[in-house]
Length: 287
Image 1 (tube, rainbow, N blue to C red):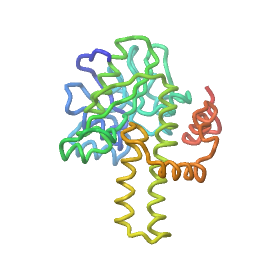
Image 2: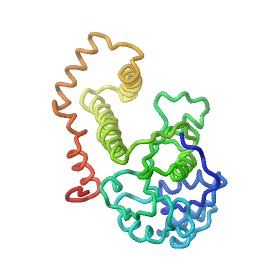
Image 3: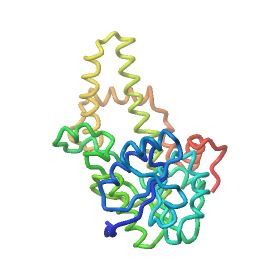
């Protein structure tokens, strides 16, 4: 763990957007000096309604220790092209998803530090003790979560700025795990969106199919699915209990019927590039 820094000057670009509002709601609780920047009228109004002052982008980044780009991936190329040249030497440019950074779409400077951070979201195995923690499935409100960070610098001071900011914007944070930008891109999207989120959506499709095609009452189908999903994850990811012999046979049938033999190709570099190119609306990823 990197030692925390003192009070920082933080510029939030896109402060009135979905993620911008989430992290701004946490930053306002800290002692840090925060500059809120928002271009859209709706986002500006949300920022003002939350009791926060708006600052123009040039002023906000001029003296910032770290600039948090809380804007969609598709906007990062143009936004960083405009603002990175205006940032002071030694500043940290932090994006909240790895796709644009890995694809080389961001404007960079040799005298700045580029970093990426992403929340892990509260674990399904988190021991929750309050109604607020139970309600916070996304994280950043009440339920503790980890975060993943990547930094393209060997400067411990820059790493400390990143960790301090990450712990503030995603609070409450238990651990910050450090990886490379490429590794973060392999985790998000490949591991958690391409696979885990896809499986979550597939479970919903299966639930709907059980109700529509098999005629099972929806409450019964939902109850048995939710309970068995917890058992499946606890047994599969933690080894809490062994699957029964009959269950293992059914699992093999499911794998043969649903999963392609070459599915692990999604972890290859060329497949990652293909996936990110689709997400970023690019023909190819060129680095």
